[in-house]
Amino acid sequence: MRKYLSNILKLLVTILALWLVLREVDLQEIWTTILSADLWWIFAGFMLFNLSMIVRAWRWWVLLRGLGIAPKFSRLVELYFVGNFFNMALPSGFGGDVVRVIEVARDVPTDVATGTVLLDRLAGLIMLFVVAMVMLPFQTAVIPPHILWMTIAGFVGGIVGILLLMDGRLIRRLGGWLPKPLNPNENGAVGKLLQAVQGCGWKSVLQAMAISIIFHFILAGWWFTSGLAFEQSISYSYHLFIMPLVAVPLLIPSFAGFGPRELIVPTLYTVVGVPQEIGLGMSVIVFVITRLSGLVGLPLYLLSLLRSTIEKRNEEESAESAL
Image (tube, rainbow, N blue to C red; front, top):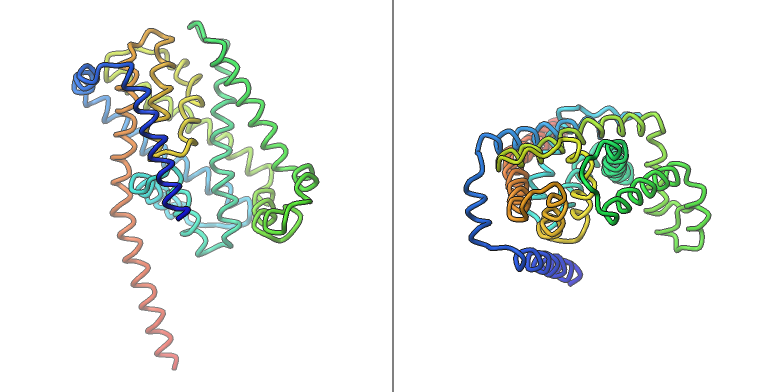
C-alpha cells in the first residue's frame, strides 16, 4: 500500500508541475519549436550524457577504493548504465541507485554499497554549487535575488553537510535518542551507513569531488548543446552557474524527475533572453536524451542476467562434481 501511495504522490506532483508549466505556454508553439531542433546538436548532447556515465562510474570507483574495495571499473560503468535504464523504466529518479546498491552488494556489505552510492550522489551535488559560486563573478546577466540566494544556500548547506557527515560527532550526539535502527551510535542501518561513508576517508571524498567538477562541465555541455539545437548561443559560464538549480528539482518525488524540472528551467533561461517555449523545449530535449541513453543499459542488463545465470549453473555443476 505504501508503494502505491508513493507512486500516486509522484504522479500527482508530475501532473501538477506540468499543468503549471503548460498553462503559461502555447502547446502548438512548443511542439513546433521541438520539431525545429537540430538533430546533430541533440546527438552531441546524447554522446556527452553517455560520457558522463563513465565519469560518474569513475567517481564511484574512487570511493569504493577508499574503503579498500577494488571492483572492476568496467563493472561499475556497466552498473551505471543499467541503473540509468531503471531510472527510465521505474517511476523514480532513484531507481537506478537502488539497482546499483543491490548489484554491488553481491561483492560488499549492503551498508557499504549504500554509503558509497549516497556519497557519490552527495559529492556530485555539492560540487554543482561550488562551481556555481566560482562562476558567479563572471555572470553578465542580471541574476534575480531568489536565484542568487538559493545558490548561496545550496553552497553553504552542502559544505556544512559534508563536514558534519565526515566528522560524525555532532550527528552521533544529536541522534543518540533515536531508536536503534535510526541511532547513529548503534549497529543499526543508520550507524552502519555512517561508518561506511566515513570509511571512505577524506582523500577519496576529495578525489570524488574533483571528478565531480569534470562531470559538471559535461553536464553543462549537454544543456549547452540543447540550446544550440534551437540556435540559442547561451553563455557556457551561465550554464555552469545554473546547473545546481536545474539538478535540485530532480530530488522532488516525481516520475523520472519529469515536471518539477520543466517548471523551473524556462524561468532560469528567460533571465538571459531565451523565450519560455524554447527553454521548455530544451528541457524536453534533455529529458529525451537521458531516456534514450537508458536504452543503452537494457542490453547490458540482459547480458548481466545471462552472465549470472551461467555462473550460477557452473557453481551448481562444480558442487555436484565435488559430491
